[in-house]
Amino acid sequence: MSEQNLFDMVKRHLCSCSTDIAMDENIEAVLKMPRREIHVSIPVRMDTGTIRAFQGFRVQYNDALGPTKGGIRFHPDETIDTIRGLAALMTWKCSLHNLPLGGAKGGIICNPKELSIHELERLSRAYVQAMYPFLGPDRDIPAPDVYTNPGIMAWMVDEYSKIAGKTTFGSFTGKPVALGGSEGRLDATARGGWYVIREAARDLGLELSGSKVAIQGFGNVGSFAAMLGQEVFGARIVAVSDSHGGIYNPDGLPVRDLVTHKSENGTVVHFPGATHITNDELLELPADILIPAALENVINQSNAPRIRARIVAEFANGPVDNDADEILFSREIQVLPDFLANGGGVIASYYEMVQNFNMDHWEEEKVHRKLERKMTDAYRAVHTLALQNHVPLRRAAYTIAVSRVVNAMKMRGWV
Ligand code: NAD
Image (tube, rainbow, N blue to C red; front, side, top):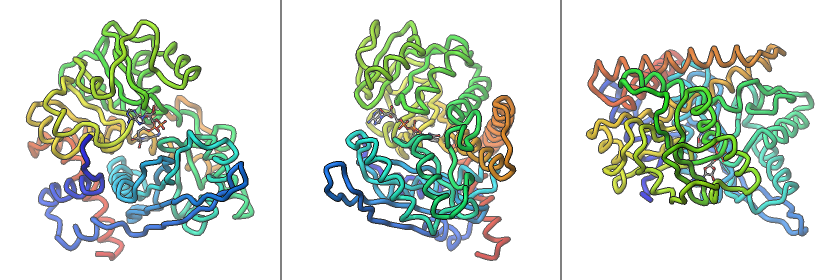
């Protein structure tokens, strides 16, 4: 796997769009640094009675457009530079999708698979206690990300509300529907991504019905990408994988059975009637659409020349590194950039906040309708600019997103 640092990748993309928007180098320097970083040590009592210290972060990258927003990851390999890169991507994502929000990201270095449910709850609550002064509906609003979920958001919003002395559902999103969560939030990232794929496929003359799709990662985003791809968009899911490995069947996999298999066995591996493949092999399969939906940097200089898909839809953040980006562009493989393609999650999170503020609850159909409109509009704006400037979609997306952030900073008198 390539060792490119996600934050460096994001800064290189920022540089490449600076000429397109005639950005002053001093403003560029401001945008290359997070506005605020919080590092905490979190002591947690383990079930054995011993105390263990965990390291936690929150990076509030830029709040020119509004309070910052972004997920919290629990991962053993988490690094501050990954969190910085992801927080910057959240800034561009909220801007590109025209949300009144800035960008942030958080994380704890831990392996949740090795923690008991009680240890996980104590760790989640302790993170909120440590970060409390910096969070809140008008400051910074976290959400689930890798290895965090609605249950963890429920503990976190409860802890926040206890400290605040009042129920404050708008302080976290991605909550269970019974606790102020929104209908349609759970599959919003994957659903939004499919709306973008649909538009791109239309532009490329690719028929979605029956198209072959390979998906890396079978968590929140990947499993819904598979289900929606098959059931709503008529695609054939030929391969999926998780951290244990992958499976392949060129005739298509029955996705609902696969979801059951994963929940019973903890992995998609050993699914009956499918061939075992590695995560690396999955990326190079003869598919029409490749959806990386796990971690960053998986498509790089070494495997980019062998990618066979027509569309690479980045449902994960940063799965295609800078070198691979250039290789794929030269090979006319359409890369749908992360902060465009996976914006559905934060859009539905924003709808969740709006409902919380108004003590309202929308029907799922309303969330889908509004999400479809926003994703389609963003794709069209990016695609039009990319054609006009003869640049990849990613560069056009950066141009739109960054120029809005710069304008907001100028209007606020920061630069
Ligand atoms: P998740 O924890 O639910 O799932 C992650 C999946 O990746 C799991 O299936 C896991 O087994 C797999 N995985 C882990 N390491 C792997 C490896 N080395 N090789 C292959 N698979 C591996 O996380 P998620 O919420 O589905 O997030 C996936 C990606 O999507 C991340 O990049 C995340 O930042 C991005 N994303 C998520 C959301 C959201 O709403 N959840 C929104 C935008 C972007």
